[in-house]
Length: 365
Image (cartoon, rainbow, N blue to C red; front, side):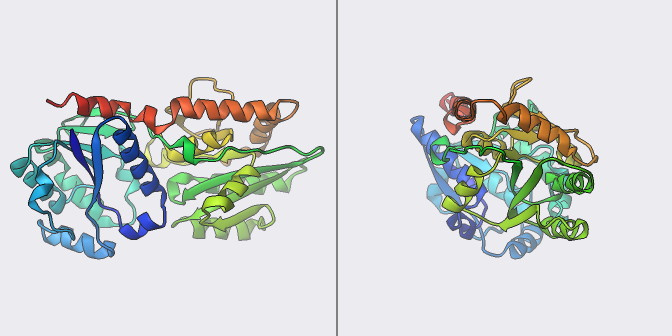
């Protein structure tokens, strides 16, 4: 059984080790470990704007030319690039000249609230996406939907390669009155960290017995707004913007952090069940987590996950302090980290989460 994993992301981002590519390569490795042969086939261009223009006006455009061997595979796993004339034309050719089943992964569903940077993306997608059922055999989705745009959907969960994530060896110093929160993202509106900044503003206006620090790691369109809030509230002492960090630098910062902050604004795009990678990476590192919406892999009343309201209210910092105190004070920190790591390995590792896809492929006749 041989297949291709089709992607549409720039090779430049692949070389830089961006999160999307880390996940894609991890999926490919896990599928190969299952005994199914799959390799990446990337259709990309270094200029995103040029891609959009040609996708809109030229229904046959992709920057990489397809050769005849492309159609000689048993299956194709595609990371959904949003629907366009070019994408539909590609699918049509795959059905006409090939024999393989076509499986398309939708990273976020529903996703209309997530497309904000390019107006034509959502306009063209809405216009064309009901045609997908003519060509696609199955979607994979991180939602609970069983059918998307008239196509059967396979619910899966996001996974990570736990073996590539170092485990925290954090210790708590005596009389340490500091709590360090970490938020890693390509910052966008739905990450909702403005709610946390607003909460810290209120917290520091009142009498407090702990210093709560927020470490923002990454880049993105929302970072400018966060900087404006930090300056407005005079919080630069407590909110540190690190930019993009990788490798040992990132591991060291995680090691010195107390709690991993997941997205706090998913309600802004009508998402109330999330499968985001950062939740898995925090857990694998040994960090308890905070989220505003249900995380798919987390069981009810899981003691290492704290939920804040999924609305526009400022985050109650004292509630996070209480969560911290219950876990960190007078408890075995080493045991907690081991339990978090074990949970991640058993529930979040890519070898586990990719199984529904592997089973579907193996049943292809």
